[in-house]
Amino acid sequence: MASIIITGANGNLGITVVRRLLKDGYHIRAVSGHLGAEKLPRDGRLEVSEVDLFIEEQAKNYVEQSLIKYPDLQAAVLLVGGYMGGNYQEVKKPDIDKMINLNFYTAFNIVKPLLTHFLNRADGGQFVFIGSRAGLNAAEGRDSFAYSMSKSLIFRMAEFINAEGKSKKVTATVLVPSTIDTETNRRTMPGSDYSKWVPAENIADAISFLLSETGQMLRDSVIKIYNRS
Image (cartoon, rainbow, N blue to C red):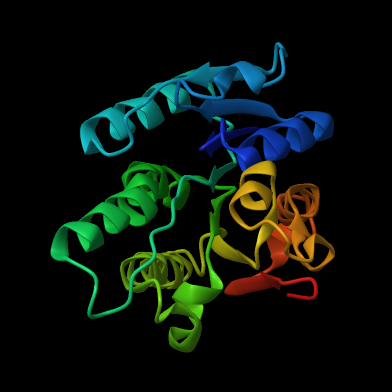
């Protein structure tokens, strides 16, 4: 089975995705922060590293080292992100900078060196991003301006990757969940109807499908996983 990179592996979604893809048989190069890393499974096919994805050179070095060790690297699943509320009038420039750094540059800094490799690889490669309804629809993002702006860049980056990789088997897919059913979201939104949310396990299943032989045939994909919310 091929190798993949997963960033944000220590998050609630990341841990679930790691477990699902280990079940599929992948060798995983996981980028994790310190907090929550102890929850990752113990498995000989899982290699966990702490990398500051805000620093372009660190991300580049990590990709290059990964490719030396695993030239069969097939995909990157980029899960790092965070939320901030506040409408257009309330937001400050540092808020926008923070959200762009967290939601865009942590992905871009991996994409840039890895895309070059994929474009020169006979079998191409895949990028899987997590988008948001707020980044896709301005009406839904008006109360979280900085967050929405930063997530909108993910869709544009995916479009550029797909345009660049169209004839070279390189694709980018953006999964767009509604509220993800995690312990953290339940704590911050008590009293909500959790049955309408999307379980992290279902998002992990969707990622598993995207990495499958059939999933690799999809092009220019934005996949909405909204359940009933």
